[in-house]
View 1 (spheres, rainbow, N blue to C red):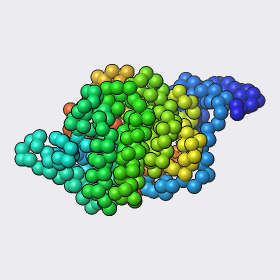
View 2 (view 1 turned 90 degrees about the vertical axis):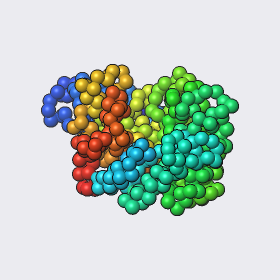
View 3 (view 1 turned 45 degrees about the horizontal axis):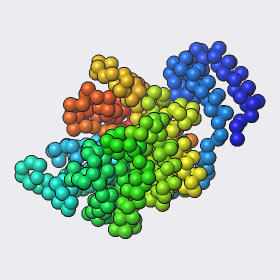
Length: 415
């Protein structure tokens, strides 16, 4: 039901008052906290958007429901430990992650890096000497346990052989036979039974190129998810299956599909029984952690509220959402990166301020949120300095900490 006309009129009057007062310093902090915007003009635009939000039906969030798997330490970070050639660097990375206070890592176990040359073949013959493809992953699991860090194992990235007999979908497309993916999931679950409990099945299947060189397909992803879910639970009933994080997008061009539409179609296809935790991406992009706008055609740090609404409407009120990736991106101007390819732009000081504030907002406003994993800790090298993605890092490849590293260490210690 839409809000009353009286409410809209009152909010309009308030907006006009704020138009007069917004440039005054005493109001600046409250407006930043409400709108996620730093500049007066942007704050006023956000306030206008929030006024329009009042004319939309209220989201069904059921914040007082009993929600599973939210009573956890929320501090996680994404890692690329499989790319570190030297075991000593993996160890140093996990030691630093522990010292900051993180108790979770989200780490890819790439199918193409484990079952490399053919089905059932777990030798790595890409370089000499030949070795087991499991070696570095076994090392990661051991080091994480030594540092009392839980692993969320992200299982995706099919090997080339799995596409045979199907169209050329590139490196990320689903396998020609979905059962092969279920077999791989079952193999990983079996190998690390009792050592890894949390498995995420795929990543961002609603956008290019994560579903390959083809149109995305929520029904096919639901099928893939359910086959792998059933296989994992048969091997280890204690495992916790996390659905793929959906990329926040309003696109509907075939190669990309609005995450809210994609998610509802997953439910319609029967995926509701096939995950224990839903996941989302929690990027702030072009506004800060205080952005309280609620518009399905905008993307901000609170977009997961729409996913929560879909879950409630489909009877999944007790399931949580974990944020698989979250951060703000301080791309420096001197990097020479086209502004059209940036994921929002903030300063390193703003990034260091915003990320802890996002954890605080989740703590106070979003009881359905569990683990929030920062994207990302570090990359193995600096060859990607010409890409926006590189600048999300908390630590440089040479282990030099960024301001975000220091702010998170201070924030976690204060909790």
